[in-house]
Length: 416
Picture 1: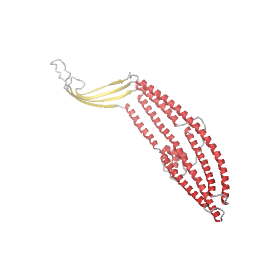
Picture 2: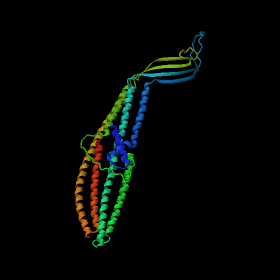
Picture 3: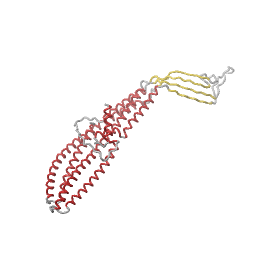
Picture 4: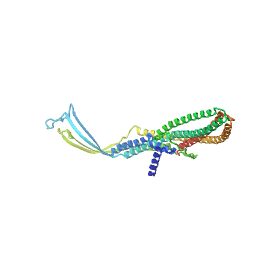
């Protein structure tokens, strides 16, 4: 599976550079791979690794060094004369090294690592959710460019048809069947078509630049976008990454609750202290000497003014908030899906009527072509009928692309 994924990526990359037809799914895959936000996954992993290492280091021996020199106004004296005990110096010196080793903490370290791991999963899933939301913008750009391609194809057909009529009209003018200057009307229309070509090319270039920014590859003006075959499955099941994010957030809260439960547990340390100073542990020995102590130390925060309990209550409220967010998300998503289902039905109705209109327009145009040849109608009248047909064909293409866009967004909303 891993090799097939690499081969697919290589195919996508080579296809883009070679300016082969680009599919909608390839745009999705390139977005997931190249959008700058993806880099945050690696940064989060590095940060989590460092934080986990910091937590794990707490199980290792901790060495502390301390040195001090003091001068005090009075020192302890033995109030018995002539017993041979020299009074302490008022200047005293001490250097101490202390080694602490955590022995028992009731699983606090492991709970901390699990909480950190849960947080990393949430962060990475949030990136996935943010990227997934961008796919609707990719849809909008992709199908807008696709519509421009279809409009250009229709303009090409209109351009060819007009050039064909010009030859016939010039012949008719030559034989006196058609009024002079009728060809000029058609030539003026060809200039308008060229303006429309220029506008389409400019708009396509602008949209391609924006799409390139999303998918991380330069797309030149010659790129052709594939017309996708999209199927939708009407159902109530939603498989969006947001659902996984809500679940991961709840898991993170559970991990933090577990961490809080371990936070109040007693902690047992072993320690060893070694030092050198004047005086040492024997306060009656007024000289520099070495010393050491070893022992166990118990640390237990028995009373914290219910801070731990209140923190757990706060986490419980966060869990309720996430439940509410999940409910709102499902409600809004289902509302949007129902609207899109109605939109698809509406556009399908338009497409059916568009086809009937175009069939009628073609009959009218065929009659107009014959009348133009015989000088019965003017070139302007013929252009009017040709423009009507072009506009109706353009409406059909627009509705078809709109239907594809709604289907694509519907699938994104469902997580398909």
